Image (tube, rainbow over the protein chains, first blue to last red):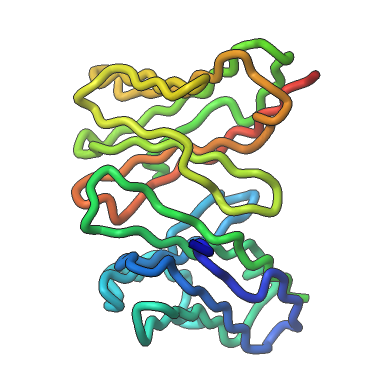
Length: 115
Length: 112
């Protein structure tokens, strides 16, 4: 199993540009999560999906952030327009919600720098 | 409001020593408490987890101690090794475990 795959690994963009982060969850996992990690705020849950449906997006910081999951094997997190304060490491994680006592599997993250 | 409070922020331990990281929570509905280990440039990886119906769980050199009445749980790393140097996060969730609340992390440095 290749695990949770995120792309790109690093992204440097200018303020105001659109940024799209991508995630491929583990095959068979039916829950997908987007987290943001910063030194100041630690790991923050942005949004999660169950069976491709967004369940809780209360962690999405602003309307500039949007996430989609068009099918069970792909999700995107988009920031438009990007701002320097969006600089962080963004993690995607997945799990099989049908299995009890089972944690997330995280991807390796996308390090976003907005200049 | 931070749902899970973790301490210390950083920890230095000599090789062979015991590393202890503590977490406290307020929400009594939490019923699943995992610990994650994160190496630089990697995502957090599940290390060990416990449910509140047991007071201790051990996997190799890693032990979770759980005190339900105090609403506290801790990770003990016995015989700490330099390869254990990483950031450790505690977390808590309830229900169908879909929303994990993470602690702020502890950066562990095990000196040779």
